[in-house]
Image 1 (cartoon, rainbow over the protein chains, first blue to last red):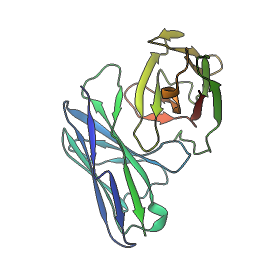
Image 2: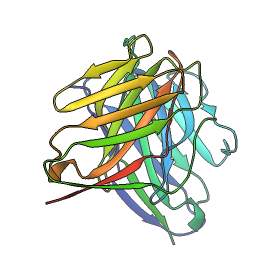
Image 3: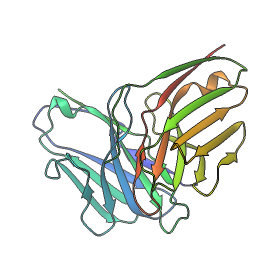
Length: 117
Length: 111
């Protein structure tokens, strides 16, 4: 149980285009989902917390107008990288927290490798 | 935020030996911790967790130790196997809020 999927697993796009990444909790409801970014040989950096039906909370230094997050249902959150540039190339990972789960364990998706040319 | 973005320290161990991976966390108010294993190109995988009211928890071949006085966590892996080669992260949480990840350690098991 507690499976989280991401789509696509890998995407290559041209500079200036927008890319949407989906995160789904497949067998549980997640009131809260999280988006992380990971550069090579580095740790996961929390970008934003996404709550179902409300606006996302962004970490300091993360541009909310560039990284648009939508959490329209209890099983789906999307991250849209708008006007992507080469420096946005990274591994984007989402996680989902089981609604009402105690303790608040997060389950991670397999990640999306974004390459901006 | 509590994130760090430093380059990963590395640890090499011989197959069959025990491994100890350390983690210093930053927030004294953190009360729940998880160790994750991340293989190349994949998302983090849950290994073991511990609440702040405990100082030790054991799983299958893994033990987590928590020292709140010095804000330190360790993950012990018994009889390390080649399949244990991965990057290991500790994550700290204040109940109800976000998780923040430590630097991570790259473990290489030598056959």
